[in-house]
Length: 271
Image (cartoon, rainbow, N blue to C red; front, side, top):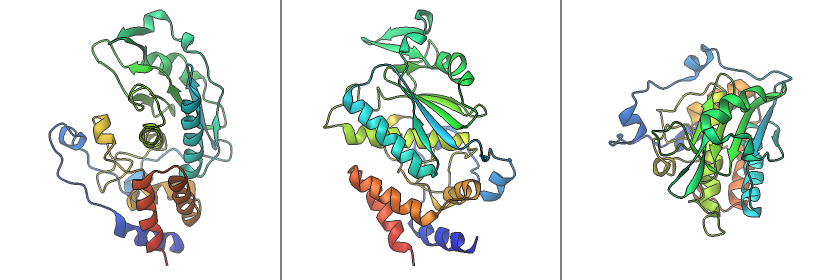
């Protein structure tokens, strides 16, 4: 892949090294070795075939007009990010979660994430599904002793669930829409990356960095470092330059200034 190698060498100049992890951050609490291309190839990773090409997004609950707009933008983004079809399914009512798997916490209702994962999602990945990602309108919790969880996934089953509730700071408005969308595309692309066998990135600032909190997630860009892009390209084989141009356009149209600036920097490195 001579042309691809030239591309990765060019954008590598924009990989920002990770700073020394601080107490409470992911890499301070979790010692991870990282994963280069050779380690990725030797797993072996999940590789889509001619049938398993589509990413499915499953909304769970009732969504406002602005929330549906964020879901549609996420659908578009994941299509560009993975260069694969993405289907946004009709929303299903959260009444599928029984009373025993829901609770009230600090004045709002939460759904038990493992119930959605084990009793709903694992049996519903279509035969054409590369991944199935549920997005809940309500907050999630993983077990009684935890306050909340941003998401949960079963990577071998290629299914996961996240919630828009905390990404929108409880209520989505025109003022916090951009911040919410930035977080939603970050978490969705990160989790689906794991479903394609990408491990947490320890090489540079990257959307595949592990995070321990929403504030730490906010510091990670919606950009794959050159090392992680190499792995994804080896698996999916797409046009790197077209993907980058489409990402740049998406960031610009959706006013995601930080990510647009990073994509522009990558474009400027190309011959």
